[in-house]
Image (cartoon, rainbow, N blue to C red):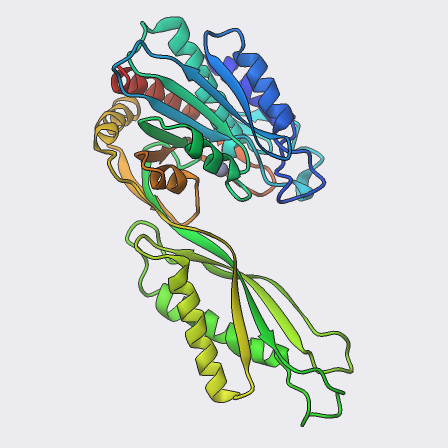
Length: 383
Ligand SMILES: [Zn+2]
């Protein structure tokens, strides 16, 4: 695989805005990028489809049909990126400095879209036909609600999937945390500021909840991290409450992000929060709290991946010269959705930095090595 071809292609993908409109509603989304890639793939003997998921937003699915009787493998990367408010002057102007390619989505996940495209192209041009199908799934909405992957697994069923995300070469991700976006709603009672006997201060009650959530994070989550996925994620995200300076606040709403570990669901976290409510209620009998789950995704734990692991880990070791390491992540990736659909899944990818932040970059030499690993893994797995 040629470095200049990879750099050129990744630059092209970075230049096309595909900011997720679920995150930033004024943005157009992934469609232009998906069409551009569909055009690029047109000259290859692939079945290429733009599958609409919602509101005109598409997944790009390509399949290199096998001759039959072999196992199929899917290469996944995502088309969308987060926003770039803090560096919009340069986010869409990719630049190569030494071995690093800078630009919005360079590592997360356009460099991985590009290398997956080049692997398929190389297979078409150089390999003798495989028995199993090779899928390229470049999907939308990973940075939002993962609707692209949910749509894909409803309609397609490869025998295994490799999720390409910037994990750093040598690492193979076999587990990651799930997460929930929760609203905690505390009710008070509005009253004149000079009528403490009538008012119930929802913000003061919320402060008691926040203090205990912070303690749960420090004392429970921090003292019992998952061996691979690290400490369970927790942070506060949004807060609102009250109407004016002169009135007791009748409501306070706190948005939080909170993680789940393998074996847990968001119900475990909700139960902990409800336990905190009971503690605050003991202190303030007029306390009233409620938890609303806005979005929840279960954690990822690879299963049935032994054949794929054996081939992939051997290829990683051959290419980078050291053994592959089974790792976990505290962040969510779409791997969990493939695995939940019964598709054995592993995650790997090139090294990069500054994801979701200014001056994101990806290490081009690692993408090239990743391409070599993917191509030889496909040749063995799908033969
Ligand atoms: Zn990503």
